[in-house]
Length: 178
Image (cartoon, rainbow, N blue to C red; front, side, top):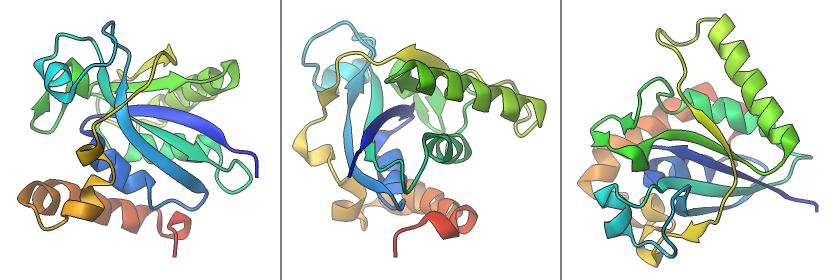
């Protein structure tokens, strides 16, 4: 199996990890940090908003099962790509909407997807998602990995992540792992 990588920032990585883990063709999802200027940042440093990093997920996927374009569609439909440095109550540059492309093809496909969504007026406001080359990826601390599956009874998971998962499951039924 040949796999590829995709790296997205869409607010809190706990939420996006929980969504993308459920997609057919996704073989691995790792929460981490990208796009900043400090080596080996910690969660606390990233949360201060001074390192320049975004909370991201790095997705390993099988392009024979799910395409990069399909991943992009899930990315855009499961967060608000029109708010600058904010997703819900999470505010700061670490929560920005970002696509970190791994190849010129990914960059082109990301821009095409934005153009298509903008033309079809899917969102009331303009998409402000940054499209930027991949940079050093730093794994988030172990307690952030597989967070929702290990902490689904915690209030943040019940009140923030579960509603996002419910919406995702309704919209992308045919793409969910059985």
